[in-house]
Image (cartoon, rainbow, N blue to C red):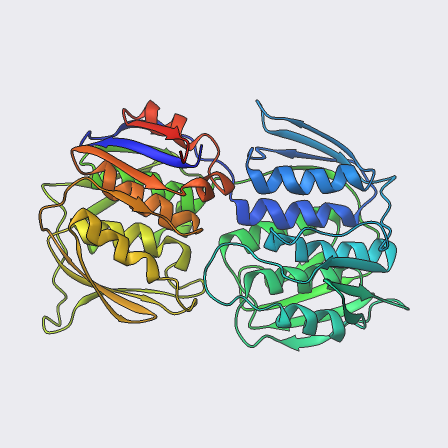
Length: 433
């Protein structure tokens, strides 16, 4: 059941409680391996990547129990074992690389498949991770079909400066530093909300971290780590997604949002398309007076633009959502992906709806919106928010559309179709046959 069928043209209305952020949940799950104390995690989403990591834990002998209905996960890694000759970490999930530091700390060795990958967002190298492992004193060896990472002594504290503010490399640095007695410092650290949430979990375990939310992290490692209970926040990606779905269909969707302090730039970006976002009493909603319309900049001879880069820039993962708004809005807008090569290659699919999108180069496109659109059958690449963006456009057009290969949505958004139906959408999963 990998395709989405939607009969669009219905304004979506209602309330949604978002799930937790996949990009916070997965590194935190990896970090749980650092402690032998019992843990209880609340609001764990039932998504494919979570299931894969929990299957790894079970294979290693950990005690795992997930109540899928309530989202309560209990973990105990007291009897976990890892044998490099027997166990390998799967290649199909990029977060596997964040299991390396906990395994190094617990068992002095980790083995992972040689081709770690996630969404098809251009080249995503693992060299920055290898560099971090080596700085802390680990040996990294390429063997046939896998990478072997091992240490022969305690990890040593380091001072490191990243080439770019990589989320997973920042998290891997903190994981390594937690097991390295002494003080480690990372400059040019990523600071996204999910990185902050990850650091808060590490602090709960007993790791002292200074500078959370900034580009410079100071980690005091070597402490004995404990357990406890941790509740995940709502995913700001999913909050934005449902706000945008309400706006593009001319509806009224209210989304639970416990952290509106993360939204000023996102709100201003919505405003560029004539959407006003309001945050009241823990809920957010997006309002549109009339049709979507690109707002003319004060400097009238330049295009309205959305520039996506590492936080605190506009989040690059949300760029496709706003490209969908740009296609629908009257007027022209430029979208600039400053992070991934080739991540905008999918925009040709928008032409099947009748949209006019011009590719300036591998990092920039221009939408010429406001034209008449028609239902279509489109193909999504393996990128979560692209599948959603194509669905958004389809949901705004009266008639039957199909988004093929929409399965990546399930990697981040549990009960996505059920949530849409609760808002009045006519949508269903269908097989590829």
